[in-house]
Every structure is written in structure tokens, then in C-alpha cells.
Length: 191
Ligand code: AMP
Image (cartoon, rainbow, N blue to C red):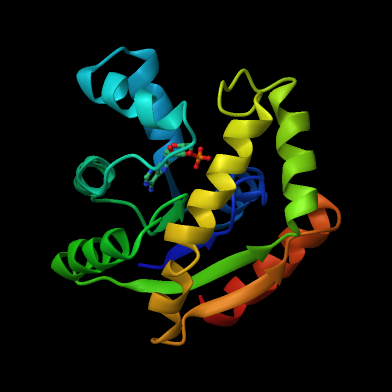
């Protein structure tokens, strides 16, 4: 089993690259943002609770997303590996993920961290807001709040994996294919 974390701030291209990576490597894509938006569209209690945080650009409580990931792991016993996108976003989530994978005698192979300047992030997110239909993309104040959440709570997750020498930085600017090729080169060294 090969498990990969695609890491980076909002707007760094995790969703776009995840689609391409899962097609190439046959990994099961687990995006907590997508799972939460699915809960919102079904108007579940979990979705309604999460929406309050998401609309403000804040992180949803750890226990909510950890529970969702735990269920998703259990629901996919045949997966040849998982591609985690937008998770873990706090140190507590990273520690919980290690424990959950441990139970399945698995671990994280590598964290690929997309590096994109803040100016470029805001530009991309404002542009995405014109078409994505995501309420957290079409308000610059919410976009900035998400980047602040990233800096204060999420960036340090890379340090957690760095202690196990599992982090590789990849330039997240350039064409989609250039970035994809750089990601694939790193995965191919390890798979
Ligand atoms: P994303 O689609 O990854 O940009 O996530 C959209 C929003 O969902 C974030 O701004 C958070 O409010 C919430 N979210 C997604 N993943 C997580 C996570 N791992 N932990 C906490 N909140 C999350």
C-alpha cells in the first residue's frame, strides 16, 4: 500500500493535481473538503455544523474530519493506496492519521508539498470563485482567513512529517503538466 499526502495552502493546486495523480497511480482520492461539501449538499447534521466554519474560512473541528477519514479508510479495504488531499491540516489530525494507518499496518510514504507564493494563491482563488460555485472562494476576506488558518495551524503539519524525513517540496507554479511531471518524478522514486 502506498499512501501519499498532497500538501499546500488553499489554491496551491491540490485538487487539480489529485485528479491527475489518482488517474495515473490508481490511488483512492480522499479530500476532506470534498467530503464536507458532500455532507453540506445532503444537509446532514455534520454538514450543517461544518458549514458554519467553512463559510468563515475556519478549520472544521478535528474530531469531525478525523471521524470522516476513519470511516473512509474502513469503507475502502481494497484500495491499493490513498491520496490525502486537504488532510491532515493540524498536528492532531496528523497524529490521528498515523494511528489509523498503523491499525491497518500501513503508513504515509511521502508528503508532497506544493510551494506557491501568496500573491499567486489569492489570484487563483479569486479566479476560481468566478466558476467554482464555492461560497468560500468568492469573498476575498474569507480567502485571506483561509490562508491565515493555513499559516497558523496547518503549515506546521509539514514539520511533523519532516521529523520522519517524509517531506518533499515541489514548485507549485508553472503549467499544470509541468507541476504534475515534478510530482510524478518524486512518486516514481518511492513507489
Ligand atoms: P478545501 O476544499 O480543502 O479547500 O477545504 C474547504 C474548507 O473545508 C476549509 O476551509 C475548512 O473549513 C474545511 N476543511 C477541509 N479539510 C479540513 C481539514 N482536514 N480540517 C479542518 N477543516 C477542513
